[in-house]
Length: 160
Image 1: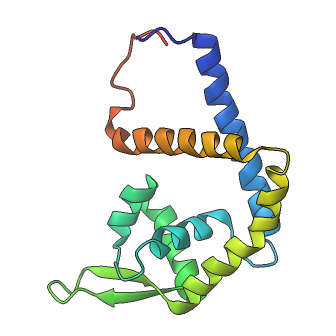
Image 2: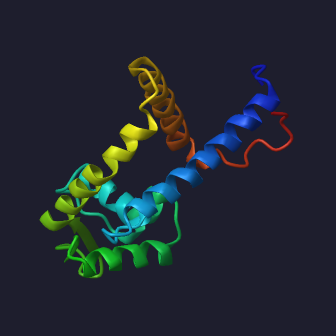
């Protein structure tokens, strides 16, 4: 233990959870007319980082830490919308790779443009330095959590 105040750590974790819930609700409300709920947007966001790279459902379940039925449902919605395409592997026809389409990239771009005014509103009273600090802190937290996916529950008995 490195001496962090347990009460403060508890508040940070609770505030992250509350922030997640509030931002998810805002996002879904904003995206109602676009018919792009957060799970679908998140998947398009994932694919848009490297549009030429295909992903299997198994790879997506690992990336999103979600169960296979939930990932399959999201993938199927995006395929029906024309935002993802499916291609069989040349080596193993049982393996299917999913790729983002031009329409998927455009839907992602439009979603970002659609939510940006709300993002500007949320941070309107923040200084650029405050936004930079939050950006750096969240980036660090995201990277730590991503790098330590397998450590959940491996420290029972430790006092926070």
